Length: 307
Image (tube, rainbow, N blue to C red; front, side, top):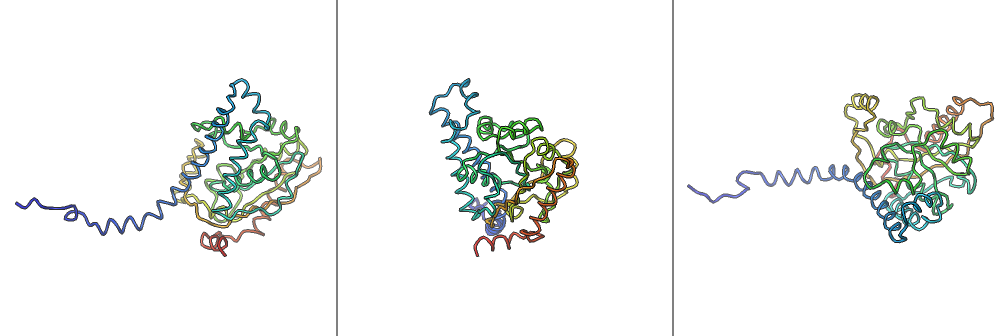
């Protein structure tokens, strides 16, 4: 019996190589979201290093979290990292940046992409160029991610009840919220429809605090990252029942990202909450219609990036 054999006798090596070549680009598109998570962990590490370097006791830490001056160094490093990533990979730029006030309160309302990297870049730009840190209303799951607890507090991420938002605005801060939230992130698509599900909490905040609303949209954000549109109705039922965002995200395509900051929306005191919400949605839809080719195209968005 001839015992001289190799793996080639049992496996078509050329087929394996071809399959690897075929599926590697697909695998990479699912790994890019992991890279964004890695950037968040790098941000968290920067915060922890900064805290350790200054040897701040935990009781002092809780006090100083209310005074941004202590964390300026850490936040500056984080902002530079995110700003560089946006510039290099997406050619990120902002139109209408002057509509975000240098001082005083305002409520920023933005469209939520599958992965809202555009918002991270906007936060970085505001900190670097306007010296203002946006207070960001985020989903509660952010606060349960291992290793992020200190970072989310330093970067002013919070769940955002109506009363807490009004309090921050009355203190002269900027707040940003995406009314569509995770639902819009998971179930939106390249048609760029708003999925707000009747949410008007942001309008209650704006009315009670008597502040303008600034609509924000980023061109091609749905082409940078997308969700896998397989059994969307099934996953939507799961999300509606258990708030579990199970739609897979893929992408990282080097498309052109340009954030359009609309003019502040002012409203009279006799406007109802529903009217304020409708005014905001209409204005945001106008910005989308004027700046986004629908349906969105990954190829076209990549061409815009390099030509």
